[in-house]
Length: 404
Ligand SMILES: [Zn+2]
Image 1 (cartoon, rainbow, N blue to C red):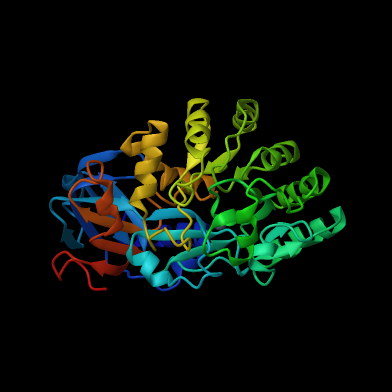
Image 2: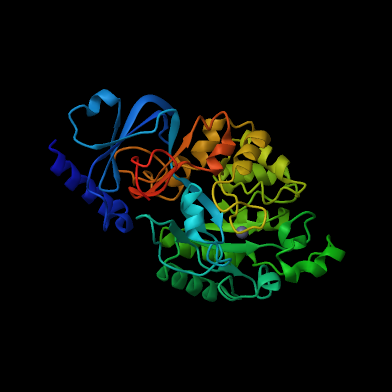
């Protein structure tokens, strides 16, 4: 195929799959060599990546590109990876600077709880998807801790629930979040945490459960309305009562590993119902149940995806290596499996199967680190190269590699 027809085809692909990133992109083909390439699934050597028009055009052995006229970037003893996907963040609500997050290796973020907006970014800026505010019971979590503005919507009837879901989706919600949190779990940041000022009074009575929960019929209405429009529903939950309502109502995802120990029967049911769990192990490191819940879900074959909860005070504004390490230690996942959970598996989960991969047609969201991150996950927190939609965001290699 001639190079200009290849560019045309790629732009068409980009416009269909990633409308945001295809507007103004660099047309000069860029060929990147690195000692190791993690393509979202596996580590490849003797592999180069061709970027055209903000999109991955081809990934192949260096010899395959001999006749291609391109600007060449040779990163040497480095590892090239897809930009990471953070599935649990509160960027908008806590005003975390998007550029800082992008420079630290996250190229796509999902805000679950915060101001509602249409998806944006990906063209040299952080790609941001959101659920908008969290649907909850009147007076339910997170209202006692954080109020309602931009963070919570209370519903009291099935009709209100359905209307709320429709208006959130109209406003750009890529998914819907509900809260099923009675409060009181020991070690939970929402019960005893320093940034949840309103939750302080629960410290004296950690076992006292006071926050009202959405009943099953209302959660069912939310799930039904969301599914009608192709949206998944995630639930904030921390203990068995919330988990039971979420499971009985058909919720698709747990936004955290539950803080309290969850009975095995419920964990089994979650896996049977193909519930996905976002890990947030680092944020919940003081919770007594997370190791048991993570181990059991993993052993049962459950789907655990990376999310660190950016905006939580313990979490860096970028890739959180501690989260990746905790995933390995609690579940026996291998380094490649945790890398997949933060890249290709998350892209597929977001219905964008090219996102989080390096394969033809994928957005050129790339990071590179000097060395081999499968031997040292910590280096991922400080990438040496970041590209978003083919635009160079950060470069610690030779100046000629690319100009931020
Ligand atoms: Zn959260």
